[in-house]
Image (cartoon, rainbow, N blue to C red):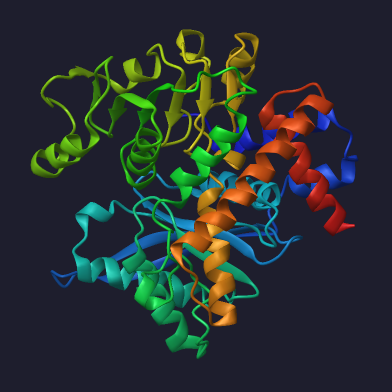
Amino acid sequence: MQNPYQNAMAQLDKVSQIKNFGEDFIEKLRHPDRDIRISIPVKMDDGSLKIFEGYRVEYNNALGPYKGGIRYHQDTEINEVKALAFWMAIKCAVANIPMGGGKGGVTVDPKKLSKSELEKLSRGWVQKLSDILGPKKDVPAPDVNTTPEIMAWMADEFEKITGDKTRATFTGKPIEAGGSEGRGPATGLGGFYVFDTLRGQLGLPEKCKVVIQGFGNVGANAAKIFSQNGHTIIAVSDSKSAIFNENGLDLKKIEEHKKKTGALKDFSGTKNITNAELLELSCDLLVPAAFENVITDANAEKIKAKVILELANGPITPKADEILFKKNISVIPDVLANSGGVTVSYFEWDQNLKNEHWSENKVFDKLKLMMEDAAKKILEKAKENKTYLRMGAFILALERIKEKML
Protein backbone atom coordinates (compact mmCIF):
# COMPACT_ATOMS: atom_id res chain seq x y z
CA MET A 1 0.00 0.00 0.00
CA GLN A 2 1.25 3.48 -0.82
CA ASN A 3 2.52 5.43 2.18
CA PRO A 4 -0.08 8.20 2.74
CA TYR A 5 2.51 10.51 4.31
CA GLN A 6 4.65 10.34 1.17
CA ASN A 7 1.50 11.20 -0.83
CA ALA A 8 0.87 14.21 1.42
CA MET A 9 4.45 15.42 1.02
CA ALA A 10 4.23 14.92 -2.77
CA GLN A 11 1.25 17.30 -2.73
CA LEU A 12 3.31 19.81 -0.73
CA ASP A 13 6.13 19.51 -3.30
CA LYS A 14 3.68 20.07 -6.12
CA VAL A 15 2.14 23.22 -4.62
CA SER A 16 5.59 24.69 -3.92
CA GLN A 17 6.39 24.29 -7.64
CA ILE A 18 3.23 26.20 -8.61
CA LYS A 19 3.70 29.07 -6.14
CA ASN A 20 6.88 30.11 -4.35
CA PHE A 21 6.25 30.03 -0.58
CA GLY A 22 9.94 30.13 0.34
CA GLU A 23 12.11 27.12 1.20
CA ASP A 24 12.13 27.64 4.97
CA PHE A 25 8.34 27.69 5.27
CA ILE A 26 7.93 24.54 3.13
CA GLU A 27 10.70 22.79 5.10
CA LYS A 28 8.89 23.56 8.39
CA LEU A 29 5.66 22.09 6.97
CA ARG A 30 7.45 18.83 6.12
CA HIS A 31 7.63 17.98 9.83
CA PRO A 32 4.88 17.75 12.45
CA ASP A 33 5.38 19.77 15.64
CA ARG A 34 5.41 16.42 17.41
CA ASP A 35 4.30 12.83 16.98
CA ILE A 36 3.64 10.73 20.01
CA ARG A 37 3.31 6.96 20.32
CA ILE A 38 1.85 5.44 23.45
CA SER A 39 1.21 1.95 24.78
CA ILE A 40 -2.21 1.42 26.32
CA PRO A 41 -2.56 -1.58 28.67
CA VAL A 42 -6.09 -3.03 28.77
CA LYS A 43 -7.27 -5.76 31.15
CA MET A 44 -9.39 -7.93 28.85
CA ASP A 45 -12.65 -9.59 29.89
CA ASP A 46 -10.90 -12.99 30.16
CA GLY A 47 -8.42 -11.55 32.70
CA SER A 48 -5.47 -11.33 30.30
CA LEU A 49 -3.54 -8.09 29.75
CA LYS A 50 -3.22 -6.75 26.23
CA ILE A 51 -1.10 -3.76 25.16
CA PHE A 52 -2.37 -1.60 22.28
CA GLU A 53 -0.33 0.97 20.36
CA GLY A 54 -1.83 4.47 20.18
CA TYR A 55 -0.82 7.71 18.49
CA ARG A 56 -1.32 11.47 18.48
CA VAL A 57 0.28 13.67 15.86
CA GLU A 58 0.18 17.44 16.44
CA TYR A 59 1.10 18.84 13.04
CA ASN A 60 0.72 22.62 13.03
CA ASN A 61 -1.08 25.07 15.35
CA ALA A 62 -0.39 28.40 13.62
CA LEU A 63 -4.14 29.03 13.25
CA GLY A 64 -5.27 27.68 16.64
CA PRO A 65 -5.44 24.52 18.79
CA TYR A 66 -4.63 21.22 17.07
CA LYS A 67 -7.83 19.60 15.76
CA GLY A 68 -8.41 16.14 14.38
CA GLY A 69 -10.10 12.79 14.79
CA ILE A 70 -9.05 9.54 16.44
CA ARG A 71 -9.37 6.37 14.38
CA TYR A 72 -9.53 2.78 15.62
CA HIS A 73 -8.42 0.42 12.87
CA GLN A 74 -6.20 -2.66 12.60
CA ASP A 75 -4.15 -1.01 9.78
CA THR A 76 -3.68 2.36 11.51
CA GLU A 77 0.02 3.26 11.81
CA ILE A 78 2.10 6.38 12.34
CA ASN A 79 2.55 7.37 8.66
CA GLU A 80 -1.20 7.30 8.08
CA VAL A 81 -1.80 9.40 11.20
CA LYS A 82 0.92 11.92 10.18
CA ALA A 83 -0.64 12.31 6.71
CA LEU A 84 -4.11 12.81 8.17
CA ALA A 85 -2.78 15.39 10.65
CA PHE A 86 -1.10 17.32 7.80
CA TRP A 87 -4.35 17.26 5.78
CA MET A 88 -6.25 18.49 8.84
CA ALA A 89 -3.96 21.54 9.07
CA ILE A 90 -4.71 22.27 5.39
CA LYS A 91 -8.43 21.56 5.84
CA CYS A 92 -8.89 23.92 8.80
CA ALA A 93 -7.08 26.65 6.87
CA VAL A 94 -9.27 26.03 3.78
CA ALA A 95 -12.45 26.18 5.88
CA ASN A 96 -11.09 29.37 7.51
CA ILE A 97 -11.61 28.15 11.06
CA PRO A 98 -9.23 29.13 13.90
CA MET A 99 -7.78 25.65 14.45
CA GLY A 100 -4.67 23.72 13.46
CA GLY A 101 -4.10 20.14 12.35
CA GLY A 102 -3.79 16.99 14.46
CA LYS A 103 -4.82 13.33 14.29
CA GLY A 104 -4.90 10.33 16.58
CA GLY A 105 -5.39 6.62 16.40
CA VAL A 106 -5.04 3.16 17.90
CA THR A 107 -3.96 0.02 16.04
CA VAL A 108 -6.95 -2.18 16.89
CA ASP A 109 -9.86 -3.99 15.30
CA PRO A 110 -12.63 -2.57 17.52
CA LYS A 111 -15.09 -5.24 16.31
CA LYS A 112 -13.05 -7.78 18.30
CA LEU A 113 -13.46 -5.89 21.60
CA SER A 114 -16.38 -6.03 24.02
CA LYS A 115 -17.99 -2.75 25.05
CA SER A 116 -16.15 -2.69 28.39
CA GLU A 117 -12.78 -3.40 26.67
CA LEU A 118 -13.49 -0.59 24.19
CA GLU A 119 -14.27 1.80 27.05
CA LYS A 120 -11.06 0.86 28.92
CA LEU A 121 -9.03 1.38 25.71
CA SER A 122 -10.64 4.80 25.08
CA ARG A 123 -10.10 6.01 28.64
CA GLY A 124 -6.53 4.63 28.49
CA TRP A 125 -5.79 6.74 25.39
CA VAL A 126 -6.85 9.87 27.32
CA GLN A 127 -4.91 8.89 30.47
CA LYS A 128 -1.68 8.68 28.46
CA LEU A 129 -2.26 11.95 26.57
CA SER A 130 -4.21 14.19 28.97
CA ASP A 131 -1.27 16.55 29.55
CA ILE A 132 -1.15 17.60 25.87
CA LEU A 133 -4.95 17.84 25.37
CA GLY A 134 -7.23 20.75 26.24
CA PRO A 135 -9.70 23.24 24.71
CA LYS A 136 -6.90 25.72 23.92
CA LYS A 137 -4.25 23.06 23.14
CA ASP A 138 -5.50 19.98 21.26
CA VAL A 139 -9.14 19.06 20.51
CA PRO A 140 -9.76 15.49 19.24
CA ALA A 141 -12.92 14.22 17.50
CA PRO A 142 -14.34 10.95 16.13
CA ASP A 143 -12.97 9.34 12.96
CA VAL A 144 -13.09 5.81 11.51
CA ASN A 145 -14.71 3.38 14.02
CA THR A 146 -14.98 5.95 16.84
CA THR A 147 -18.43 7.09 17.91
CA PRO A 148 -20.14 9.84 19.95
CA GLU A 149 -20.26 7.35 22.85
CA ILE A 150 -16.45 6.90 22.71
CA MET A 151 -16.06 10.71 22.68
CA ALA A 152 -18.30 10.92 25.77
CA TRP A 153 -16.08 8.37 27.61
CA MET A 154 -12.99 10.33 26.61
CA ALA A 155 -14.47 13.71 27.64
CA ASP A 156 -15.52 12.20 30.98
CA GLU A 157 -12.03 10.75 31.56
CA PHE A 158 -10.41 14.09 30.69
CA GLU A 159 -12.70 15.92 33.15
CA LYS A 160 -11.84 13.37 35.91
CA ILE A 161 -8.10 13.86 35.34
CA THR A 162 -8.00 17.64 34.84
CA GLY A 163 -11.20 19.03 36.39
CA ASP A 164 -11.96 20.87 33.11
CA LYS A 165 -15.74 21.22 32.90
CA THR A 166 -16.09 23.11 29.60
CA ARG A 167 -16.46 19.78 27.68
CA ALA A 168 -14.70 21.62 24.81
CA THR A 169 -11.68 19.26 24.62
CA PHE A 170 -13.53 16.59 22.60
CA THR A 171 -16.04 17.19 19.81
CA GLY A 172 -18.46 14.78 18.13
CA LYS A 173 -20.03 14.02 21.52
CA PRO A 174 -23.69 12.96 21.99
CA ILE A 175 -26.07 15.96 22.24
CA GLU A 176 -26.72 15.31 25.95
CA ALA A 177 -22.96 15.37 26.64
CA GLY A 178 -22.44 18.76 24.98
CA GLY A 179 -22.50 17.69 21.32
CA SER A 180 -23.69 19.89 18.47
CA GLU A 181 -26.90 19.50 16.51
CA GLY A 182 -26.22 18.41 12.92
CA ARG A 183 -22.84 16.72 13.54
CA GLY A 184 -23.93 13.35 12.04
CA PRO A 185 -24.69 14.54 8.51
CA ALA A 186 -22.16 17.45 8.58
CA THR A 187 -19.46 15.87 6.37
CA GLY A 188 -21.90 14.67 3.70
CA LEU A 189 -23.90 17.89 3.83
CA GLY A 190 -20.79 20.08 3.62
CA GLY A 191 -19.68 18.03 0.60
CA PHE A 192 -23.06 18.58 -1.03
CA TYR A 193 -22.90 22.37 -0.47
CA VAL A 194 -19.45 22.46 -2.09
CA PHE A 195 -20.62 20.30 -5.03
CA ASP A 196 -23.72 22.47 -5.48
CA THR A 197 -21.61 25.65 -5.51
CA LEU A 198 -19.18 24.29 -8.14
CA ARG A 199 -21.57 22.11 -10.20
CA GLY A 200 -22.26 24.66 -12.95
CA GLN A 201 -18.60 25.72 -13.22
CA LEU A 202 -17.56 22.07 -13.62
CA GLY A 203 -20.05 21.46 -16.45
CA LEU A 204 -22.30 19.02 -14.61
CA PRO A 205 -26.03 18.70 -15.39
CA GLU A 206 -28.69 19.94 -12.99
CA LYS A 207 -29.54 16.36 -12.04
CA CYS A 208 -26.57 14.00 -11.80
CA LYS A 209 -26.05 10.24 -11.79
CA VAL A 210 -24.01 9.61 -8.63
CA VAL A 211 -21.84 6.66 -7.53
CA ILE A 212 -20.81 6.44 -3.85
CA GLN A 213 -18.04 4.21 -2.50
CA GLY A 214 -18.51 3.63 1.23
CA PHE A 215 -21.81 3.32 3.07
CA GLY A 216 -20.78 4.28 6.60
CA ASN A 217 -21.86 7.50 8.32
CA VAL A 218 -20.41 9.79 5.63
CA GLY A 219 -21.35 7.77 2.53
CA ALA A 220 -24.88 6.86 3.66
CA ASN A 221 -25.64 10.46 4.69
CA ALA A 222 -24.24 11.79 1.40
CA ALA A 223 -26.37 9.32 -0.56
CA LYS A 224 -29.48 10.48 1.29
CA ILE A 225 -28.68 14.20 0.84
CA PHE A 226 -27.92 13.91 -2.90
CA SER A 227 -31.07 11.82 -3.42
CA GLN A 228 -33.26 14.32 -1.50
CA ASN A 229 -31.92 17.05 -3.78
CA GLY A 230 -33.06 15.26 -6.94
CA HIS A 231 -29.87 13.42 -7.97
CA THR A 232 -29.95 9.69 -8.82
CA ILE A 233 -27.75 7.31 -6.83
CA ILE A 234 -26.90 4.45 -9.21
CA ALA A 235 -24.36 2.51 -7.12
CA VAL A 236 -23.18 2.23 -3.51
CA SER A 237 -20.74 -0.05 -1.70
CA ASP A 238 -19.58 -1.15 1.73
CA SER A 239 -16.26 -2.84 2.59
CA LYS A 240 -17.48 -6.24 1.36
CA SER A 241 -19.54 -5.56 -1.75
CA ALA A 242 -21.18 -3.10 -4.13
CA ILE A 243 -24.57 -2.89 -5.85
CA PHE A 244 -25.56 -1.13 -9.07
CA ASN A 245 -28.76 -0.17 -10.88
CA GLU A 246 -28.50 2.24 -13.83
CA ASN A 247 -32.01 3.59 -13.08
CA GLY A 248 -31.32 4.43 -9.43
CA LEU A 249 -31.46 2.80 -6.00
CA ASP A 250 -34.13 2.88 -3.30
CA LEU A 251 -31.92 3.97 -0.39
CA LYS A 252 -34.50 3.40 2.34
CA LYS A 253 -35.01 -0.23 1.33
CA ILE A 254 -31.25 -0.71 0.93
CA GLU A 255 -30.66 0.50 4.52
CA GLU A 256 -33.30 -1.95 5.78
CA HIS A 257 -31.67 -4.75 3.73
CA LYS A 258 -28.22 -3.92 5.16
CA LYS A 259 -29.58 -3.88 8.74
CA LYS A 260 -31.24 -7.26 8.19
CA THR A 261 -28.40 -9.04 6.32
CA GLY A 262 -25.32 -7.08 7.43
CA ALA A 263 -24.33 -6.39 3.81
CA LEU A 264 -25.45 -4.57 0.68
CA LYS A 265 -25.07 -7.47 -1.74
CA ASP A 266 -27.97 -9.45 -3.17
CA PHE A 267 -30.41 -6.54 -2.87
CA SER A 268 -33.26 -7.29 -5.27
CA GLY A 269 -33.31 -5.38 -8.56
CA THR A 270 -29.59 -4.56 -8.40
CA LYS A 271 -26.44 -6.11 -9.84
CA ASN A 272 -23.66 -7.23 -7.46
CA ILE A 273 -20.33 -5.70 -8.50
CA THR A 274 -16.92 -5.28 -6.83
CA ASN A 275 -15.63 -2.08 -5.23
CA ALA A 276 -13.07 -1.88 -8.05
CA GLU A 277 -15.83 -2.09 -10.70
CA LEU A 278 -17.87 0.55 -8.86
CA LEU A 279 -15.03 3.10 -9.19
CA GLU A 280 -14.94 2.55 -12.96
CA LEU A 281 -18.67 3.03 -13.64
CA SER A 282 -19.79 5.69 -16.09
CA CYS A 283 -21.44 8.51 -14.08
CA ASP A 284 -21.58 12.28 -13.60
CA LEU A 285 -20.22 12.25 -10.06
CA LEU A 286 -18.07 9.69 -8.24
CA VAL A 287 -17.88 10.05 -4.45
CA PRO A 288 -15.13 8.02 -2.72
CA ALA A 289 -16.29 8.08 0.92
CA ALA A 290 -14.25 5.24 2.45
CA PHE A 291 -10.43 4.98 2.67
CA GLU A 292 -7.17 6.36 1.28
CA ASN A 293 -5.53 5.31 -1.98
CA VAL A 294 -8.52 3.78 -3.80
CA ILE A 295 -7.74 5.61 -7.07
CA THR A 296 -4.11 5.06 -8.09
CA ASP A 297 -2.04 5.08 -11.27
CA ALA A 298 -3.22 1.45 -11.71
CA ASN A 299 -6.91 2.32 -12.22
CA ALA A 300 -7.03 6.10 -12.91
CA GLU A 301 -7.10 5.56 -16.70
CA LYS A 302 -10.30 3.50 -16.31
CA ILE A 303 -12.23 6.15 -14.35
CA LYS A 304 -15.24 7.37 -16.39
CA ALA A 305 -16.81 9.87 -13.94
CA LYS A 306 -17.01 13.50 -15.11
CA VAL A 307 -16.24 14.85 -11.61
CA ILE A 308 -14.95 13.26 -8.37
CA LEU A 309 -15.97 14.56 -4.92
CA GLU A 310 -13.51 13.29 -2.28
CA LEU A 311 -15.45 12.69 0.94
CA ALA A 312 -12.76 10.26 2.15
CA ASN A 313 -9.31 11.52 3.18
CA GLY A 314 -6.65 10.97 0.50
CA PRO A 315 -8.60 8.59 -1.78
CA ILE A 316 -6.57 9.64 -4.88
CA THR A 317 -2.78 9.28 -5.07
CA PRO A 318 -0.67 12.13 -6.52
CA LYS A 319 0.16 10.09 -9.66
CA ALA A 320 -3.54 9.35 -10.21
CA ASP A 321 -4.28 13.07 -9.74
CA GLU A 322 -2.04 13.87 -12.72
CA ILE A 323 -3.74 11.22 -14.89
CA LEU A 324 -7.24 12.48 -14.01
CA PHE A 325 -6.18 16.08 -14.73
CA LYS A 326 -4.98 15.04 -18.21
CA LYS A 327 -8.29 13.23 -18.76
CA ASN A 328 -10.18 16.44 -17.88
CA ILE A 329 -11.80 14.82 -14.85
CA SER A 330 -12.23 17.51 -12.18
CA VAL A 331 -11.52 16.49 -8.59
CA ILE A 332 -13.13 18.43 -5.72
CA PRO A 333 -10.41 17.71 -3.12
CA ASP A 334 -10.87 16.19 0.32
CA VAL A 335 -9.43 19.24 2.10
CA LEU A 336 -12.45 21.18 0.81
CA ALA A 337 -15.08 18.49 0.11
CA ASN A 338 -15.08 16.80 3.53
CA SER A 339 -14.33 19.86 5.66
CA GLY A 340 -18.00 20.08 6.75
CA GLY A 341 -17.21 17.64 9.54
CA VAL A 342 -14.41 19.69 11.08
CA THR A 343 -16.41 22.91 10.56
CA VAL A 344 -19.30 21.59 12.67
CA SER A 345 -16.73 20.21 15.15
CA TYR A 346 -15.44 23.78 15.43
CA PHE A 347 -19.04 24.99 16.00
CA GLU A 348 -19.37 22.42 18.83
CA TRP A 349 -16.11 23.60 20.45
CA ASP A 350 -17.30 27.22 20.13
CA GLN A 351 -20.69 26.39 21.69
CA ASN A 352 -19.03 24.52 24.58
CA LEU A 353 -16.67 27.40 25.36
CA LYS A 354 -19.57 29.90 25.31
CA ASN A 355 -21.91 27.50 27.13
CA GLU A 356 -24.43 27.78 24.24
CA HIS A 357 -26.49 25.28 22.24
CA TRP A 358 -27.45 26.17 18.67
CA SER A 359 -30.40 24.80 16.70
CA GLU A 360 -29.76 22.44 13.78
CA ASN A 361 -30.99 25.14 11.37
CA LYS A 362 -28.48 27.65 12.73
CA VAL A 363 -25.67 25.06 12.41
CA PHE A 364 -26.62 24.20 8.80
CA ASP A 365 -27.03 27.86 7.79
CA LYS A 366 -23.56 28.72 9.14
CA LEU A 367 -22.10 25.58 7.51
CA LYS A 368 -23.62 26.44 4.12
CA LEU A 369 -22.16 29.96 4.14
CA MET A 370 -18.67 28.73 5.07
CA MET A 371 -18.64 25.87 2.55
CA GLU A 372 -19.85 28.07 -0.30
CA ASP A 373 -17.30 30.75 0.53
CA ALA A 374 -14.42 28.22 0.67
CA ALA A 375 -15.50 26.61 -2.65
CA LYS A 376 -15.62 29.97 -4.46
CA LYS A 377 -12.22 31.06 -3.08
CA ILE A 378 -10.59 27.79 -4.11
CA LEU A 379 -11.99 27.98 -7.63
CA GLU A 380 -10.62 31.54 -7.79
CA LYS A 381 -7.14 30.44 -6.60
CA ALA A 382 -7.09 27.53 -9.08
CA LYS A 383 -7.98 29.83 -12.01
CA GLU A 384 -5.54 32.53 -10.86
CA ASN A 385 -2.66 30.01 -10.74
CA LYS A 386 -3.82 28.02 -13.82
CA THR A 387 -3.97 24.79 -11.85
CA TYR A 388 -6.51 22.25 -10.62
CA LEU A 389 -8.78 22.57 -7.57
CA ARG A 390 -6.59 20.60 -5.14
CA MET A 391 -3.67 22.90 -5.76
CA GLY A 392 -6.03 25.91 -5.50
CA ALA A 393 -7.05 24.63 -2.04
CA PHE A 394 -3.43 24.08 -0.96
CA ILE A 395 -2.40 27.57 -2.16
CA LEU A 396 -5.24 29.19 -0.18
CA ALA A 397 -4.41 27.13 2.95
CA LEU A 398 -0.66 27.74 2.80
CA GLU A 399 -1.17 31.49 2.32
CA ARG A 400 -3.30 31.57 5.49
CA ILE A 401 -0.89 29.40 7.54
CA LYS A 402 2.19 31.32 6.38
CA GLU A 403 0.60 34.65 7.25
CA LYS A 404 0.00 33.45 10.84
CA MET A 405 3.43 31.82 11.18
CA LEU A 406 5.11 35.06 10.15
